[in-house]
Amino acid sequence: MEILISLSAALIGGLLLSRPAKRLKLPAVTAYLVAGLLLGPFCIGALGVNGVGFSSLEAVERLNIISQVALGFIAFTIGNEFRMSQLKTMGRQAITVGILQAVAATVLVDLALVLLHLLRPGIISVSSAITLGAIAAATAPAATLMVVRQYKANGPMTKLLLMVVAIDDAVGLVLFSASFGVAMALESGTVNAVTVLVEPVLEIALSLVLGAAAGLALYWVEQFFHSRSKRLSISIGFVLLTAGLSMVEFEIGGVRCGFSLLLVCMMTGTLFCNICDFSEELMARVDSWTAPLFVLFFVLSGAELDLSVLRNPSVLLIGVIYIFVRSLGKYAGAYGSCALTGCGDNIKKYLGVTLLPQAGVALGMAITAESLADGAVVRSVVLFSVLVYELVGPALTKRALLAAGEIHPQGQTSARKKNA
Image (cartoon, rainbow, N blue to C red):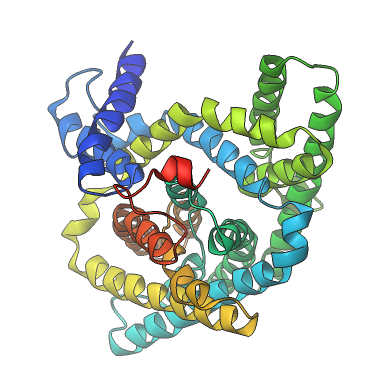
């Protein structure tokens, strides 16, 4: 009973708060996140009224399956952007930008935090500094996709952006695994080449293979049905299946093998959209079905934001440096790589701003990093940065797309009709 009432409060509360957000010209995503904060354990949830809000972070984590499923559908939708026609025209640009902007953010954050360690050794260790540098590479695709969908953004920058945030996940995974392996080596005195080199590459390869197999299987099964509702149901079932399979972990000869949920579901969507002649219509129906699921995802994400990190001055200092330098790295990396690949002026100016949001992937990396000697500092800094980026990032993404001319100002024309 409490779970159902809490979910209804989250869904209805998020949607109601999107009305004043619209008047303030803020994206609906921001309203959903704020609604989550209000319903979370640091506000209404603190009252302890059963079913009204979330009384603890553990209560929010019990609903983690909703977030996992939502991320699966988000990745599946983004995979639809990797059509061969777009890959032929923008594939090289997307790969170059996806790699260079992530590497730039990692290098600059590494340099800044290692310098902070040299100046104030007691605040942060070298191992935590380079781990945070790798986490800086991660970009949250969910908020970006929601802003694009809400305002029906369309154009070369939007297409490139969706491809870059998808590639960013694979790049971030490799950078984090390598950096975290080095960090563990610094603390233990031994280097594990399997952890640093083999496991991240194997995870990416296994994810792409599983996603490709799921995409082929989805297309094969869809051919047995002609009803739109049944085809929709099959698609939903396959996304749930791939999301579930991506959580499987096992070992072969001492090598840990696992999957990336985002990469698996993205590859499923990519392969399916390139071999299925009715994929566009089906994807549109999937998008309409997932609308309430995405609202719940962002409200729960807001409820998970831990405000207790604001009490620690050291975390705030490291967090401010991390946010500023990461933002600089993302912007400079995107600008330079766009210039290198011959992108237009608008893309060079504004793409970096749209790559700032950070959430689930970064938090997952931070949880892994808790095994470091001062891993609690890493987790607290990431929690603080996610709090800032999730509340500010969607609005910045909207402004960047608006400035690039890929969203038409509301009030002058209907964004839904103009960009359809």
